[in-house]
Length: 256
Image 1 (cartoon, one colour):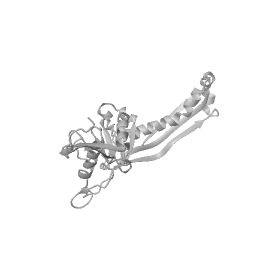
Image 2: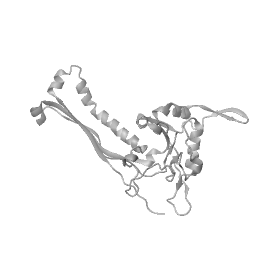
Image 3: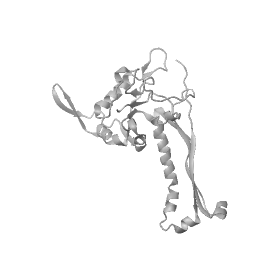
Image 4: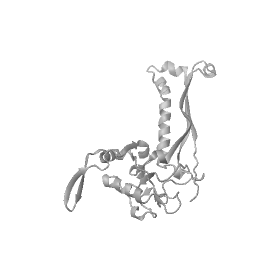
């Protein structure tokens, strides 16, 4: 039993768009002006992408870590299962959960919850470790699995087949989970298009914000207008970053 800490990391991101007098004169549709006004929207998309890539630990191979215990960056979802947040191939810590588990029906969610109930332990107490009370609230999937996930969570009934025959019963997960999906997971390619995540994301991740997304306008009275005929400049920026403060609240499931 010892004190643990993690560090956060933030980055400043932004864009500046300069529009000169000629562009405005030849733009008969107003498209240039609309795109300038949409600069903040594009930056918000970049922030969402940064969050999704952080949650999925997509940039660990490039040395960009979302989990930094004691200031040392490390992979969040260790495939040997040592962080108690991985179901899939290579899990030598929880050998009963060492195979891939594609998201196909409600039994897959049940298996993931069973893993969280039996294998995720709290070692921050004296004596024998105990289960972590962290009810799953969200299932995060790539867009390619959104329909499957929504069907699992929102269907009113499920069918169970056993030796006695076929039986229909109320969906045990009806209203229990929120389904979130993002094309920024599909974008990662490879096995990321089949992997899925289950847990309480707000307890595992924090967004540290120095500046929110901000948009600034500089009109024709600027010095650039006199020197380069710039009639409008738009700047959008934010300063922040996502970090994992723990490992046990979100489970990654190997989907293939």
